[in-house]
Length: 116
Image 1 (tube, rainbow, N blue to C red):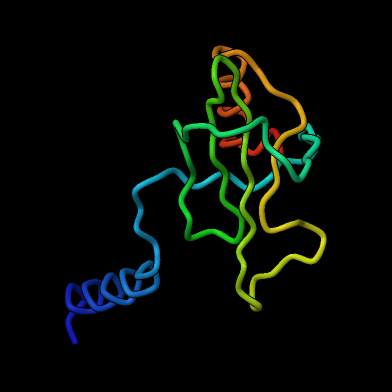
Image 2: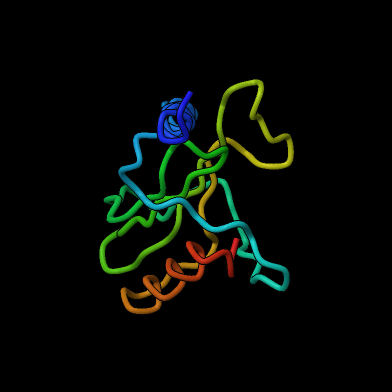
């Protein structure tokens, strides 16, 4: 097998690994040491509209939700037995809510691994 054929074969294998990922939303970075721990509760502010979200291919996905004029995060833990996290409820919400600018600043921190 030529070198270029081996590279193409390796690329095909890597593509197969990402088969379950729709790759339509960002993936949060690995949580960093010293990150800010967010306080999570099991109820939301009320009905809201998702304005941003992370990719659902991860064990835990996040949504930035607008409820009227304020925002909060929704955390969804994978429901499958293989990925189930006993210490995290299937759906939880940040206990704190923010106005738009502050919410987007916290969203960037979450995506960068600086908050969880």
